[in-house]
Length: 226
Length: 38
Image (tube, rainbow over all chains, first blue to last red; front, top):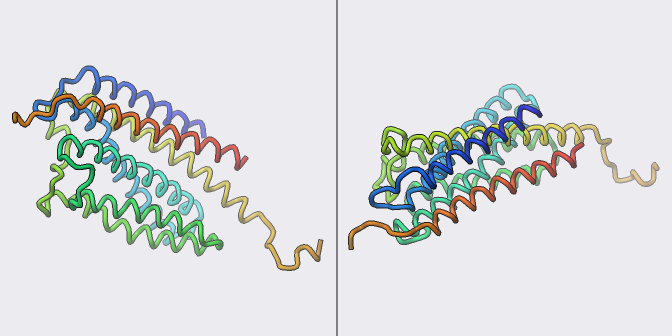
């Protein structure tokens, strides 16, 4: 628990430092001007969102092999944090798209494939809410997560496979060296924050599961017995 | 038309504010859920 909070505090510190450098120290990009500064939060969110989806995918596989409830708790946490990151990613991208492309949204392969995974994650979280039996819920959401994760390589390669409006992946190799530090600091910032959130959310899931399995079974005639 | 985007700070502020608010609201929701489970 303490470790999780250390990650959260570290994440916030890195994000504050990276955002300060990105907003006030790094120069504006030649063509995109100040709008390019959105990259310092958008790209780290995208990288870490992919990591969160991979984490949920790994937890789903591990659960199906082991049937250990701890993996289901990790899956639940990874799913929820990846949904948060996907939502932020779409909003940041939309805010960037308006001044650069002239539209808030375009049914471009990259944007569409991210939106598909965002709605799939929301659907799996909703599915978990509908199934009462903990084991059945875990199996169904693990299978659904594995199926949804097939979209991740499509997201990654969409800008290479199709004539996408979205630019190719950004990395320290593809951007000017003056942009490296804020980009890296924010990448670690989002990473630490994500790890902290996943650890805390896993704890919530484990405690909910323990409470759920500790409850006596409800019967139709419970009132009569009492 | 130079092809250069001028201004744009309002978009930058919106993107950073939204990101910060998203993380903050999620952190608060986690704290509340952690308290509920105790």
